[in-house]
Length: 229
Image 1 (cartoon, rainbow, N blue to C red):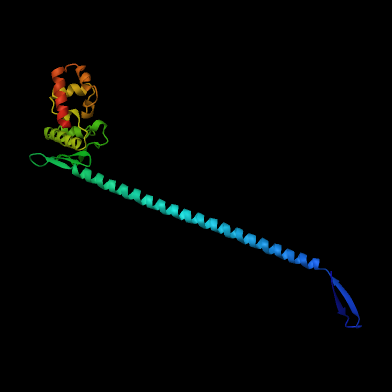
Image 2: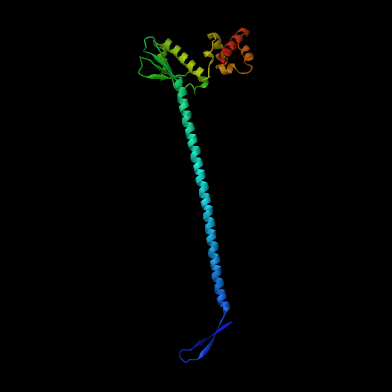
């Protein structure tokens, strides 16, 4: 307890004033707690801000990596598209009839026929998508096959299709150096491609085909070896 004196301005008497230091101490203690609380909250805000900043930095880094990987993938896709276009361009070829009017072309994986009596062009299905790289046309080819350029067109189609298949390593039986009779028997037995003639056990399979004897088997395997060389 502390004491002090106080004079009355009216009567001039002196009074003893008592006050407690405990009350002042509690007030100071309250202010100190408030300050500590404010400091703690400030530290919490700072820690939270640091975490958010670190999270933002990580997100920006991840976004940068994604942009880099996306650019790489896009550049790779563009390069592959350019290479594919170049490969297709390398397959281009043209054969013209003797009079120069009928034109058969190989372009972008297809065989195209320009026949003078028709204003349209007949195109095969894309060879890279056709089953076993067969040359397949729509019904419009019938008119050409019945026309004056039929023989020329059939020969040119075979030549250009064989070129495409050789360039793309997808040769068929008709592309091999085999007699037509042997080729037909192989196709009738379901053997259509060079890859099928290179399969394990093919010689035993060939001997089981009617009309193909040991001599023909040797002939077929010789033609296969010639293409594989």
